Image 1 (cartoon, one colour):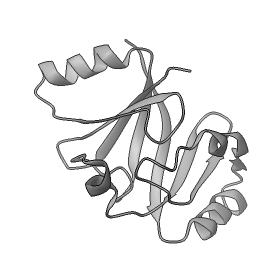
Image 2 (cartoon, helix red, strand yellow; image 1 turned 30 degrees about the vertical axis):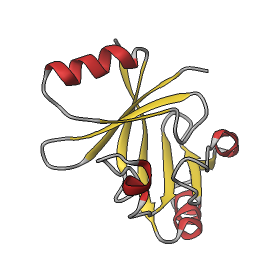
Image 3 (cartoon, one colour; image 1 turned 90 degrees about the vertical axis):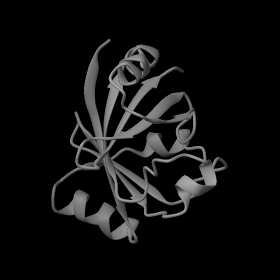
Length: 135
């Protein structure tokens, strides 16, 4: 099982201002194809912008305090943002968390078509995503 840092997710009440900032001030480029895979009918219809430096992505998501309640998951990935890792074996990673006693919310293929996503907390309460691209 391999993990690779994939993106940082920032939550905001002003997606367009954050998007403009990361493009204008930090010279990041838009990732227009990322939006095509969004699934908006499963609990998170919020606005999201995607930018990249060519290797790493930043996902800028509209803050949504009700998302965890609507999806029935304990961890809300769009409450305050998260760091995300991509894996080549999500089942093995879930087993690793279970073996170590780390609870997680299994969102499945929830927000991005073809991505299997789980979210959990680190010891300080920061949200961590691990996903596998299945498509």
